[in-house]
Structure formats: structure tokens, C-alpha cells
Length: 109
Image (cartoon, rainbow, N blue to C red):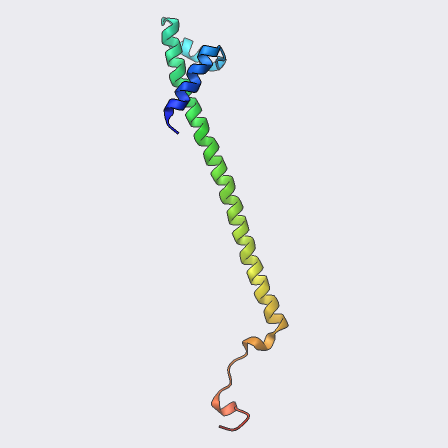
């Protein structure tokens, strides 16, 4: 997503009169002698940056949540495989017995 979307969203907020009041007050404090157009331009710039930052935080949080789920699934699968191997060894203990050597052949060769 390009930053144009964030600027458009911020401009729509200004046009609709739905401003982030705390940010608008900050702009007024930073630009006390500026006219309303300059303040609106500064507001749009800061609000677009804020929207981009919020989107990045949201994406990072989603990625982290999904990564944690994947790790938990993989750990669970590893435990399941280990448990299945132990159960198999318990049920079929002769399966992994050492191979017979020539001297231990029942036929003597």
C-alpha cells in the first residue's frame, strides 16, 4: 500500500470535519501563527504518518500472532511424533532388536 492512501484518508477526515482533536491541537501548538490552510496541510501530513504507523503495527502484530500459532503447531507435532515413537517401541519392542550375526544363526552357519 502506498502512502497516497493514508494522505487521502487524512484529507477526507479534514474535509468531513472528523479530525483527531489531540493531533489538531498539536498542530496548532506547533504552528501558532499559521493560517488554517497551512495547519490543515500539516495535520494531513502528520495524520498520514500516524495512519501508516498504525497499519505497520497492526501488520506486525498479526504476523507475530500467526507465527506463534505456527510454532505451537510445530512443537505439538514434534511431541506427537515423539510420543508415537515411544508408544511404538513399547508395543513392538522386538522391532528394533539388533540384527543377528553369523554366529548366532539358528542353522549354525
